[in-house]
Length: 109
Length: 118
Image 1 (cartoon, rainbow over the protein chains, first blue to last red):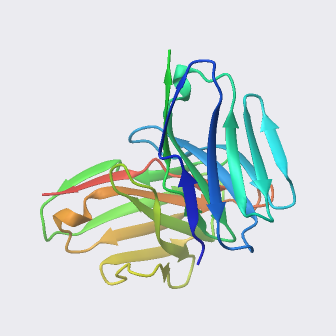
Image 2: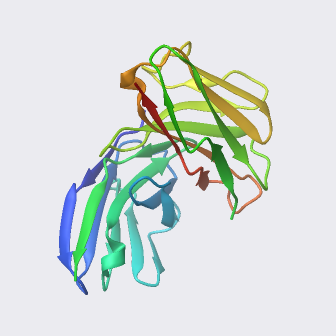
């Protein structure tokens, strides 16, 4: 089955800095890669996703890149704000989602 | 988007009792729903895939006789935790894909159910 590795497990940045979270996956058949933000006790919230036929996608301060050859994808958040503080999960799927271990992002004012 | 609801949002029960959690797709029909479990400070782990009108598909290591899944309609899937024990205490989240939205890949998550077994 699919295996997704996510790094780092914790990330602390100053407000205004950029944050980068990286994930690798094992199954070359995976074709959809969403990123979720989860606040304590709440449901995962989709923040951006990318499909295997695209190398990069951007939505305002958030971008995702995908390298199919290397089987890794990354989340980039620019101009971080304190409200970006949360747990972020990457996932990969060909049908069913396999999640990474999560990254606790803390943005200090 | 698409809306998925879950009920109850939290439940406390005694060890040995059974607890039923409902997952509903409110504005679309979902032939497939997914059930996840999330322990504190951990990731979401897929427990099973719920298929409307047929048996659920369980992930390796998940006891199908303990976690009963019923998907009797296109908008409702239920998860019953039978003979619950303290180690079953967790955050249970369901999701569903809306085949009518985009490529149909995105999963829409319910708000989750916090189960505490005393």
